[in-house]
Length: 262
Image (cartoon, rainbow, N blue to C red; front, side, top):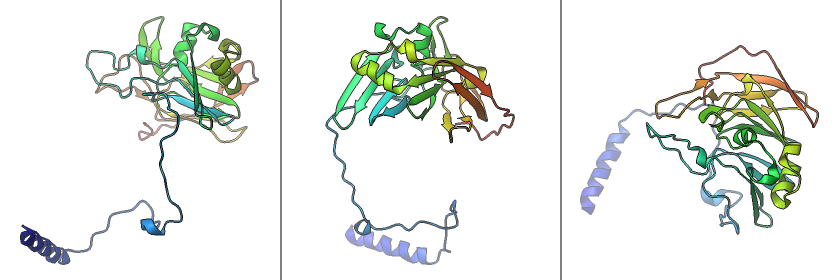
C-alpha cells in the first residue's frame, strides 16, 4: 500500500506540472502576507474564565457601564426550529432577564423584567424581551429598536415599532440592588419607521442622525420558507432625548436597494 500511494502521488505531481497556472480572484489588488506561526510577534493562550455566562442566550442586545457588561432581550432556547405548524419562536423562551456581568470579579447578577420592582406594563416587557433588536450605546444610554416577539394582548407575533432609551447606570443599580424602578427611567417612542428586526443601528457623531440599517418587518409565525418585508434601506432619523421624553424626526430616505437585506 505504501508503494501504491507513492506511485499515485508521483502521477498526480507529474499531471499537475502540465496544468496552466490558476489564480483565484481576490477582493483587493493587494494581499496581506501570511506569516508562519513561529514568526508571529504574539502568542495566543485560551483559558476558561472563572465564571459562566447565561447559557443559551442569543439574538440579544448588550451594553457596558463601568466595565460591566449588560445583556438584555434575546432568546434562551438557542437555535430556532423550522416546524411548519408550531411557533418556531415560542414566547416562553423570550428572555425577560437582564444580566449584569463583572468580568473582573467573575460576578453575574440577574433580575427579571417581570419582577414587581420593575413596575413595567406587559407591553413594555414585550418590547424589551424581543429577538434580534437593533441597538447601539451612546455614552451611558442604550438605545434599543424594534425586534421580533409576542404581543401578549393579541397573542400574535410581530415586529415591534418601539425605540427604548435605557439608562445603563440605573439599570445596573436595579439588577444588582433592586434600586430605581425601571419604569422611572425607561423612555420609549413608537414610529412605523422603527418596525424592523434583524438589522443594525448606528450613530457616528453627536449631531449626526441614527441610521437604522437593513433588516425586515416580519409578522405572524415564522416558517422555514417565509420572509418578512425587507426594508432594503438605510433609514436615517434624528432623536430628541432630553432625559425625560423622546421625540423622533425621520429624515427623507426613499432609496432602496435589493441587496440591502440581511
